[in-house]
Amino acid sequence: MHDTGWIGDTFVSDTGWDHLETLVDIGNRMAGSEGELRAAHATRDALAEHARDARVETFDVQGWTRGSSEIRIDGEGYDCIALPRSPGEEVAGELVDLGYGLPEDFEETDIEGKVVMCATNVPSWYERFIHRREKYYYAVEGGAEAFVFKNHVEGCLAPTGSVGTDARPMGDIPAVGVSKEVGSELGRRHEGQRLDVTVDIEAASADATSQNVHAELGPDTDEAVLVTSHVDAHDIAVGAMDNGAGTAMVVELARTLAAREDELETRVEFVCFGAEEVGLDGSGYLADDRDPDDVKAVVNFDGVVRGRDLGAYTHGFPELREAVEAVSDATDHPFTANPHHGPHSDHWPFVEYGVPGYHVYSETGDEGRGWGHTRADTLDKLEKRDLREQAVVLTELVVDVTGRDIAHRDTDDIAAELEEQDLAEGMKVTGDWAFGDD
Image 1: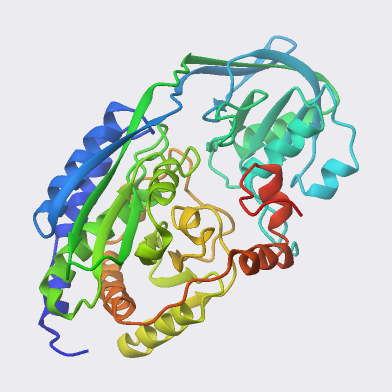
Image 2: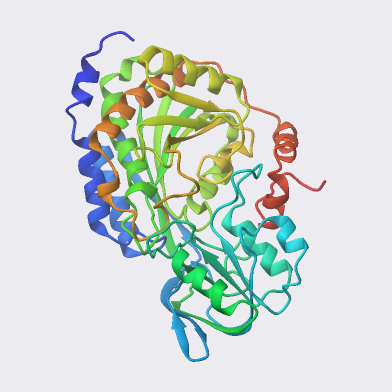
């Protein structure tokens, strides 16, 4: 590092934190909503304070607006919430509690015509995380009538999270989330009994609109490093951790990198995506429109600030690992380079084209999402100190990446690694496999 005055400025900066407060105070930022649009415009205005050509670009998304949902048995009702993109239907079936809902649990159990309940986590001994949508589509493939997603975190918090695929944005069967406490009671008292599951949705329109926010710094090169986050959040919460903090970090880095603009060797493009929570729609829209050769790397913030130390999926790109290690040494800040693939945030539509991509997050030690995707995703869980410290580290990372030679990867090699890491099966089940036939 050279001049360090910008570090002192960052340790007293309120730029990122003020923007985080702006986002959470908007409230509902669901994809396609008025709140998401307001958040996008506020983010554009915040970036315009430090970067050039700040703008909003719109795209179409599948609309979905929450109504009421209910689980009933013998006249007794249980609290639940619909999972976004669930169809609005009333169905009934015998309750089957599949515990963690591992692939083998579905293989060993007859679930046809039944209501399937699975937990949000996996056991500590299991070799990989099983995403919600993977469990949902195992239930669909098995002929289940409905899917119940049970939180593993205590506190009477029902989890949310979208279903549906790119090809079929609306899910196939009703899907609801229940708290750990409700799920435990359902399993204890009613397994094997007939449940009625009702999901009402107020609107499901194909002509909803979302938007991506863009701004730029650095030299006017054809190639760019994308520094990204997502603006949207689930409608049940203010989305402080997921992903208000990521967008606040992008805004903070616009300020820090403006102070170091003469050190940037490649153009930096800030992109705050819309509609991440319903299928990576905003990043998918941009990745499909952008020549992969024009993207040097993606540095995606999703889950930062939740803890003090940083980690990043590096997706098998050795140069990305080396950059993390160099920055960690230079700043004396813990920063773990995870070499595996993590196909569940806005970097992924680019990585699957062979583009170098980070998913940067905080190390928390939590199992699963913790408070994320529940109404407890609130500002009080975060610390301004952590945002400021991490902004210093991530500024160094972006400066390093703009000057580093980073090779794109062959997509066949990425596909092979997904097979080796036991991720391919789930991606094929959920319709997220982009690498052709076996």
